[in-house]
Every structure is written in C-alpha cells, then in structure tokens.
Image (cartoon, rainbow, N blue to C red):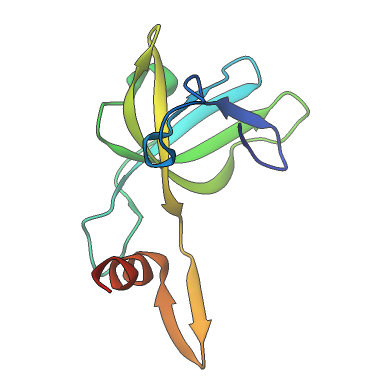
Amino acid sequence: MYASSECYLGINLEPLCKPCDVSYTLLSIMAYFEFLPISLMEKNQPGRVESEAVGLVDVKLGHHYELVVTTFTGLYRYRVGDILMVTGFHNNAPQFRFVQWRNVVLSIDTDKTNEEDLLNAVAQA
C-alpha cells in the first residue's frame, strides 16, 4: 500500500515481486492527482520544478514527478513531497516507483547532507 496521512494513494498489484521492483498503481477514486515534472539531474537544485502540473493521463514513462493531491475531504492541491518515477501502465493507469522525498536534508554533527548524496555514499561503500 502507498499511503500518506492525507489519503490512500496507491497499491502494489504484484505483492510477490522483489522489494526493489515494487511499483504502485495510483487509486484515482481516492483523490485527484496532479504531477509536477521535475529534473533530478540538476545538481545545484535537485528536485527543481520544470513546468506546470500535468494530469494522471499525461505522465510519461521514465519521467520523474512530484505528487500533488486534492482529496475529497477538502485538502486542495497539497504537495506531498514524494518524488515518483513512472515505471509502466496498468489498464492505462500509470504505475510509479517511489524515488525520494523532496528537499530532505540530514543533519549529522552540523553537516547537512541530502538524501541522494547519502544513498550514493552507501551504494559506493
């Protein structure tokens, strides 16, 4: 299950797959979803928004997006902060893999490290 405190967002349709292959299909009946296209390649500003939000049917395979949610209970255009990558489609519904949280900074002994740098360091070690 892919969820937040705001609402349920998606489900894994292949629960027996390897953990590294988990993708979630968003539940369009739970909320209205929009996606902010982002560029993870920009080193100075990771997660920088490239353009206006696109709808569920306008996402592209392999692209990264920040999730924006409008719930039926009144939460309007809430930026969840999750960065997702489109991994495929199920009956025309896009499937996403969680990549990272937007603007996460770890503070270790006054040294600020973002999540991407930490993951790269662990992978190299």
